[in-house]
Figure (cartoon, rainbow, N blue to C red):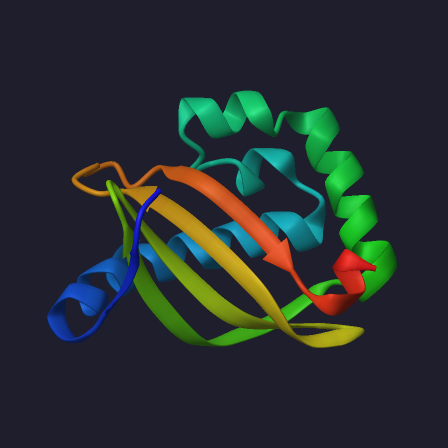
Length: 125
């Protein structure tokens, strides 16, 4: 993948402009258990890797350990090769500080998601 570089200023603001509404939609779909809403911004690879059955299983795994999503803050935008990632500090019902990471492809005007990770001590245990 190469070196991960933190973006700031105007570059970061441009990414937030599309990433924030996608994150809102994604986490609304997550909380509601609605795969159609959750996967709205998935690229073809993501849709194939995380189909509805996988979503149901992953959601159950996450909610059983840390509950439902509540909020997010402190986004950091990084660039890794041909991708740009936004990592939020998210609060869930039973854990704060969960890393919520969304990955997009640079230059993709449709802003489809190419990667999505939830990471925290409780999720790793």
